[in-house]
Length: 609
Image (cartoon, rainbow, N blue to C red; front, side):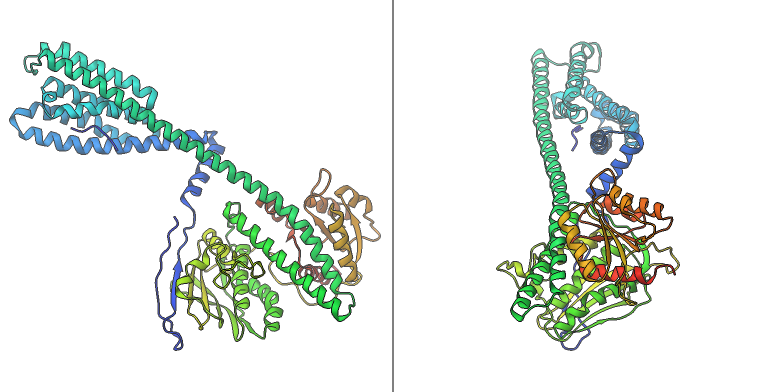
């Protein structure tokens, strides 16, 4: 008997459009699994490491070891059943068949029952090796090695190295070799039913057995070296990926800081009177700054998703809050292009991550407005085909996407209308960010489009519970009410350039600005007689305290919860989690002036009377 042993998923379906003008439009569903298998395994092992103090490498090696033993046990059972049944039916080999049947019942079946219990892995391996030893010894005693049974005995060293590895495989192979020598030279001559081996056959068998032990050891050594090299390369790749993530996290903060200050300076510059020629130059600078900020946002969003630093925080929330934010963000852009932007109010609640869902719809609407030259853009939410499923649709009357491009548009840096890689048209990361965000959210996205007939992106999301507790998402548009003239703002920013830009912009809006560079200096400059109406602070500050600490200290000093906001260029999820845990709103650098002014207006109009 033989002793040897041995992702992403995209599905597409097409459906005819109900519209009479474009019956050939094709819907492409892109199914993204909720969790990548490798990431899911890593999280489980990390939890085990934290709870039990188990080494990560040992956990992975144990899983591989169990898999080896499981496959070996299955093959041993199948082969022993087949060979024992065949030999029991032959009168001349019934004794050998009985030995194989006994090995099956005493060794292989118990090993198969224990294989799913990792704590008994040593006992399982020993049972398999004892079963192999029993059958190979029976083959030697009964003359099987004089025929085809010789090949099955030679497989025993390979089985030893496969199960036990290089070092312990040597011990078991040599032990098997010694047992076979005892059976052949000492036991066989004493038994009347044993096969009469000649000295030449005995010598040939022992030499061949020793040769196969060496071959099995050499083969396993080469395999072990290959696995070690592969493991080292994997560790190097993971270390490089972690270094890249750390670099991007640092670069995100350092690059966003000057871009943030530049945007604020330009926003203030636009408010000053200019002659027509200067006004045109300022408009060009403003457009370039906006393009730079959009590229930075897209690049760092993509980097966070690619490095798996972002995790979905699912919750039930009212979808209309996201719709209101998007309506405010794109109304002016659509009006300037002569487009009709329709965002239909909805009472639907969804189960999703409000920040990631907002990012998905923001990118889809941005693409729709950008590539639509006339007509309209529609954002709506409708009931889906299944129970508890909603379809969020972004539909435009733009140029459409040809069938051969519909899968490629979700790839990074792919732009249908930009083969020459003109950076003025962006980086081509918008739909790639959409696809990766949907992967995190376990949402399906469909594209239905044809040239000249516009495009429809359909996002399938689960329906949420309207009575679920809703944490503040910070996505509702804060508009209306009186202006912010006379509002007292305490600004804490350690970067002198960014502090000057932000202070100048706030003062141009009529705010009274009190500046500080650290949490300690902010407390020193605090005055109970002229208490601030709003706290605006960077997260990273000089000294031992960050922006969250500064807000908490000033609130304790004032004896009330002064409205506050954190601004930061950090992309680290731990930073976001700390800010969210403190119940504070986060504005990501570079901050758009309109969004900041809307936030201040809301706080100014909702202050206690």
